[in-house]
Length: 567
Image (cartoon, rainbow, N blue to C red; front, side, top):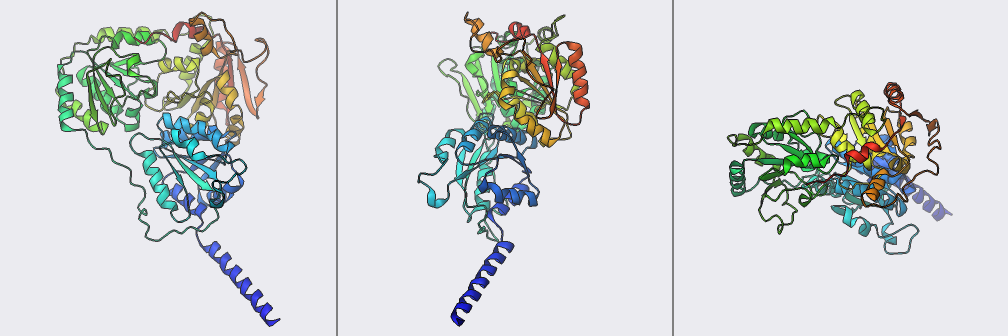
């Protein structure tokens, strides 16, 4: 009896000691959340699971907000936009198996759009790795082609692993990193050491300056050129060199063409602006770049548009962190100025002005002629009229996001963009459904700014569930739905190949009403003409929460403006 009482007493004391250790120690979840906050990551987007509960509780207590979404793909897209707009990494979470496969669409967006994102996914605990487990697949293999690296977290190196993951995600060409979370790890005590080697935080890999010989060769090539053109890509946005590019273009009198995701690096009212490659009226943009005797590419990423699809047969000077991806059989003269972008641009900035033979009066005439074609036609309520009315109401520092479809090609050229990242599109991964979650991600990142989204029927239907997310957040976002009831971009491509329209109608009857008065309690205002649309915008921008403005449009603008020749 005495022995039994002793054993009971000992057990109770052991339990009490363990509880006290758990109470006073730091769990893996708490350390992870503390690390997120320390590194400026204040939001995690995702759909929870049972194994995620310790992390959610740590976030609730630790000042990091968990943003519940309707679809894990949206979580990855929101994290992508969050990373762009905050200058830090974005973070998203999905559970094991189907949650992770859904999330992979959003992680792919981060990968090909070059955004640093930490994608946390649950995995089987150590003892079940390699076993047959409900929901489980080989997620490391799934994520390998769409991430820069992958890790599996353990309690002995939480901060060190996270530091390394962040350094990889943010260094060089940014991108996502997958971090696997064993399902039983959240509540475990961290084996954190007081003097951990990574205590100072992640150390990103530095990009060296370009080689001096390459810089001199660059200067000589540009000095000899009479009609160079600057081709600027999303790498220039990432490097934040838009001011340098404008100075160089103005100093040397060089026209600038942009890829769609570099919109705003040189605004439309700049004398050097020559247009956006790949999108609407690309044949008008080609009238300038086909005259060039040299192409100077800055941060140009062919993930948006390959060089061969538009470049004239001239020499290429490529300024970027990695060599040009170009067919050297077709373009044998390529000078790679590889390394940090800013030092190369500073050399161009300090050069004596070149002997530019560009006719800037003719350039201005071409630019004005092209931009004037984005004026609404009389008595046509189409996407051009919608975009003009929205641009008139959205402040210059407001953020407009868009989906993927025919309207994207129009926005690429038509939307006046005063600075980088005030117009956000997906032109790398190019996934339909991008528009709605990207707007929510932008509003979470900058709640003080006006945010609008332009989407088509197809992309909206893919992400309509995120209206519940927008309503729950309670923030004003104006969702403009261009409703032509079909996949219009595919329609146009069928017509160009003399094929009948097939498999693109989204609704059974064209005259059927598309939406009710609200979706998940987000009001829908229906507009069938210019006057009712402008009134609907006034109401939407005066609302406290999200609003959908459904514009029933005539899609004929697309046929006259997009899918033109690029050379």
